[in-house]
Length: 149
Image (cartoon, rainbow, N blue to C red):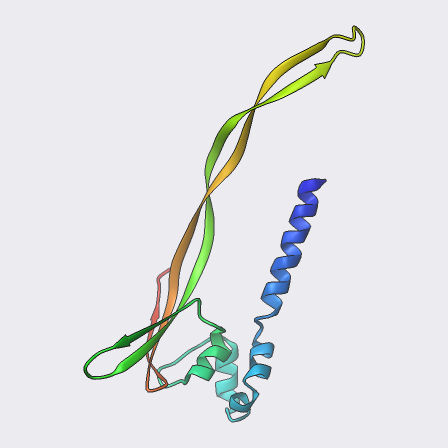
């Protein structure tokens, strides 16, 4: 019962977080930019497609906020790179953390017996993989890098 409640809370939390990053909400937030776009561009951005020449607002409309932003300054120019990552956990096994003392009373005889029960917990390793990098120079996309699956 407790694990079911935990699962329901987790699912509700995920739905709340993903609901905050829909294309419609991003279009409302960047309404001035969205209103100036032609229909083919709106459709392309709604499909999550970014092209060289798009501006930062257009990339935000298509993909949302990046997970990371990096700036690079060279003798020739200054660029900004938006990085979009994929996150996941991998199950690594069980870790044992000691023992719990359990006392059981026999209802027939009234005697009690104590025994030690091992305590364990699941162990997961966190992973991050960059899946897309968008580089801007002078506010326009100059490079789109996509990771292979």
